[in-house]
Length: 480
Image (cartoon, rainbow, N blue to C red; front, side, top):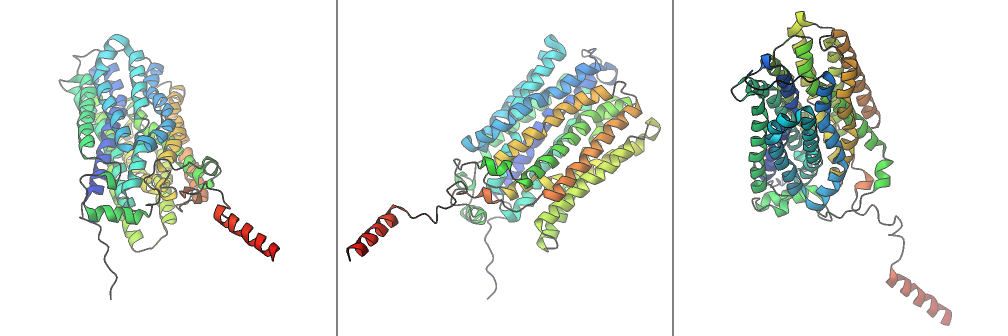
């Protein structure tokens, strides 16, 4: 008899709907997060956008404060968010930040009109505070909804929402600023998208398969069976093995590699418009469109990496650890080389600069499969907490890089100053992946076990009934 075919429910089930909601959630939050890089250029140079709206004379230092302020707030709530999502579930904890982002985005133009760059910075910091829990929630939700066989597919698709959001933030923001809505329209559109998603999430999301009112029995059983976590996987009170985590070499490998990604992301996402405007001499409209190209390449390439990973795993050509490290190496060392080349180009080589930036981003698209999903592989029970720790420490660098760039790039049109910025990013890319190659693994860690913190010798220690039985036996032997 042939092997029984496992019933996984419908081809497109509720687990796929959850991945779609996560994709859209990351997308709208990224639009609200990243449109500031285009907004700042539009606000300080009315000639490149709709001139009917106010123009502000902000210094380069003030602009850098605005760009980095989000990450000051974002950093603060990363660590606590791991506990929040374990206590209240991803549905509630992801809904509140996105709804708050919608409200604050819509208030942005009004706040700037009376408070200038200081009010703008405070508002961005507050949005960062609310958005801190987003990625711990994403990881926790994926861990509950993605069976191992579907993890690459669902996880990579969900995280590609970041690439889509980057494309939208860069691509449409310049068009909106140049339209009748002007730069205030960027904030209004972002707020509206976040509000619409919040409603969809509230109606369609569920913390896990057993709690979903939409899921069918076959799909629910498949998810629960494949997780093999019925003995505590949905328990929010599993003790966290802090000592084991902080003495785990694979955990530190993840910490280093994701910190390197945070450095590179903040440099490319926040500084690309400034580089293209200063060195390549592009206006705000073409600037935003060309700034979006690298992220469009990243979005498309994330699916190419996904197909490649699916083929390799289905044919068992590589182990999961080797696959993730191989993809991550391409995603880090390829862009490192491209960044070095970008630094040597000027406005006479605009096309080549844009091409290299696009190749850079496209190659980097594999980092989701390469290292982000490793957190769930290593520890599905503690994935939300681990993501909170990794993101908390990793986002120190996005907080600092705009300030560092402000120190290095004192003249935005100076190619030599931008060379230093790109060279530093390339070095960080190289070292981050090297540590991951040496120490990283996808093996589920012993400290992920539900009963890990129980006494190690619990099985050897007799219970009370055994003790009483032994005492009775000894007593009877003495009497004999």
